[in-house]
Image (cartoon, rainbow, N blue to C red; front, side, top):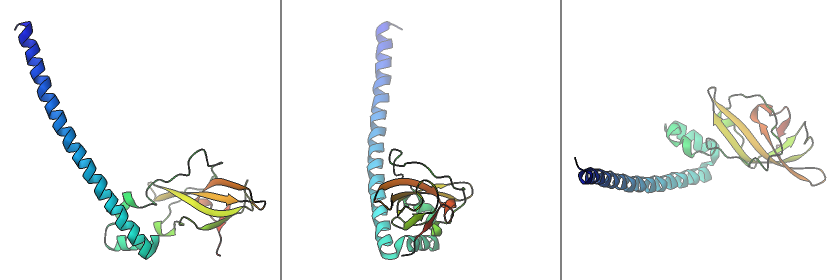
Length: 171
């Protein structure tokens, strides 16, 4: 085999490989766009259901209809939401315990700190982080707090510390 025919062989193979890659890339781009559109539709439909039935009502309806597993990636409690490492002052230690989705507190729920650095502070749940563990959901709440002197702080608490170092205000 001469030097010219080797180069031609490799060039032809490269040409075929590049054509196949571009074809696959085009198909992948098309699938990605379709996936993005379908995900947007699912999120919109879930938002409508949540507005009509609330978070718990939507979860109950999905469970009754057998769609919980399929909808899990789109549910806010299953999606990781964090307040950002820079804004969280410190993590409070709480026992890890399995939490039923129906008992997870919603964003905006009023809370008061009972112990620790922010004892006496009150505020709201700003966001929730839930991870599916072997035993069930492990939930961390990110709180936006205000002190008696008007100072504002952010911290996080575990669901397992509920009614120990913090509790829900019923007002």
